[in-house]
Length: 288
Image (cartoon, rainbow, N blue to C red; front, side, top):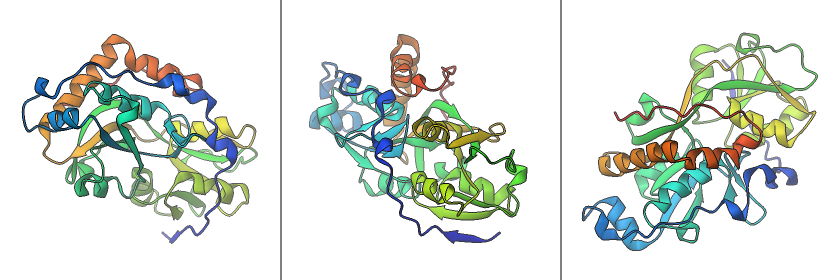
């Protein structure tokens, strides 16, 4: 399989920064009246609650889930999930520092302490569990394929042999292509938005990643792109936390399950990704 690092640095279209479907200032999650003393001394929860601030890693280029708005703040379903978690620590939006993470640096940011947690279309898998831990999942996605609207040659992953396929280094879709579709020619970049202009120009034949990410690009670029075939993997999205922080992971799992039951998860979905995608069933949290 031939691989080359995509050199394109196409600018994201201004429309990609205007995500009306992903809420706005009204998407804020109100922080509860929480004291550090409510948590066991020395835990991450106590430290964050005492500080009144948290640093969260997320994507800035993924419509519906994590996209940087014109204000500079990210918006989307991942953002709302992160706000729900922060609110249970007594931290409102003004106490959150959003740090852009890419597929390639999420583990390093967690291990290096640059972020307290990562909510960034972050698929839970066994390989990543060797380096970090996960709470969740809070959503189940699946890998799919994006092509130009008039492309009738590609109908599924079996048609990618000999084709130039753009995806992101460090992502599970890239690894899946290497492992299961080695005859495809991978063009690797750091963000999925960098694949759009090469696709428009015919420099690549397809973009592959999770179906919900691709659906966001379709929503922002009507009549340009389409999804082909059915999702061909399962991608459970989790909240990444530093390896071994079992108390923090358990706390986040509790918050997620509560949000499934009390309607906050559904509210977050409906005002972001749910304006484009059908409402899915809530997943079952994996307390491994």
